Length: 499
Ligand code: B12
Ligand code: SF4
Image (tube, rainbow, N blue to C red; front, side, top):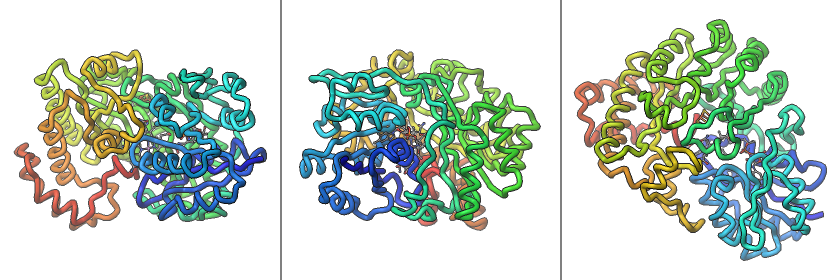
């Protein structure tokens, strides 16, 4: 039986994270197929490693996880090179990018099949039936080209997470030391990256999770999460956790159970949640979370404008008033709220788009007044193909089109698109982008992020003092001095690098 090479393209230059995507895929074929992982983050030149495996002639499959942005920079050229050098190797992509952009991937000629969402059942079935394409339509969560026609097979419900096989951590440790994945962060010296649930029960129209999971969510039990966390603590001295779930906090019961279990372990932890969901949590649960080490939570605040919250299908009950009140509630609970805003959604015309931007930046100032500790993350809206939503219809009507060639995604403009910093959306002008960026520079100067472990208190005070006149007068244009300080001190950007 041919072996499987699983590839995790480079996503970051430092602070490697446990490559959970390929690890979960490896778990799905463990005992059925031999596999190895090549982690682009841990290789100076991954091609050398990939070539050494493929030259052995033992491998039949190359599976790459691909999220938009920098991972494409390795996924595209290396897949191309494998096709040219080893034409018999099957190339399978999975993850958010190919699941949301299947046409352009399959048209490239070097992606043979796409795993659309969870690969736990799809991937082993696909490998077992690789030479029997007529069987593929029976395999769930698959996208492939059938005589030139894009075929999507049925989507399975999200699997019961507690029934899935355990991650082969020890085998990964033999390929790349697990210790090297437990990086120092704001949370602790050795931080675990853990993914405890799939999907999200909401349908925000700007969110890449929606087309894949269709408002479904399932999580591992608190006991199972805790078992894994204890394993990392006991064997590697881990003292912090980044939960990588799209929405960790869907179930108050699960959150409270996990908090209770981890209460005396001296862990510090972080996850992503919704304001309206956690605002319904009791004060007791918030206290328990705080006492168990929950230091900070990432929330999609998006905007303070109720009409736009509605048009984004933010679902639930979130309002501008609630966003402000909740920031203050988090202060009382002793948990830092990290609010992300999606700026630059299309207005009816240029004037309206400007008015929206100005409203949002003013609102962010109010958030800081309600709770100065709030971390602010600014994203510029990058469309995701949430077909049928009002927002995406508006986007299409504006003339916006995704790239037609896979290689175009690694042109500098499109990379920025995915970093949600400077997207090529026709309704935003260069002045608008500058306006947001300058505001961000001044804001980060006046309120240096609490999570930047590289800034000392003197540096924080100095940059705050220096930025104060601009922050208070609202004169943000050309903040060169602040930029220079941030550059010299290598100010980090959590929106790009994570925590
Ligand atoms: C960890 C993470 C990162 C890490 C890097 C991780 C790494 N691999 O080294 C960091 C922090 C660097 C990062 C950065 C970015 N990220 Co990121 N990231 C994540 C996160 C939180 C977890 C990924 C993960 O491990 N999931 C756990 C695994 C088990 O789930 P999974 O990937 O879905 O895998 C399953 C299936 O998809 C499938 N599958 C996946 N890969 C493969 C491969 C094969 C061969 C097969 C068969 C199947 C398969 O099977 C798996 C098991 O069922 C996700 C959100 C999420 N919850 O998934 C966002 C996410 C993927 N990131 C996203 C984005 C946009 C980015 C950025 C590009 C931009 C940004 N501002 O965040 C930056 C890039 C910057 C940079 N420098 O690279 C978006 C993608 C959205 C989209 N439009 O498609 C996501 C979905 C977050 C979000 N909700 O918006 N990210
Ligand atoms: S709540 Fe968050 S993860 Fe869920 S659909 Fe909305 S933006 Fe996406």
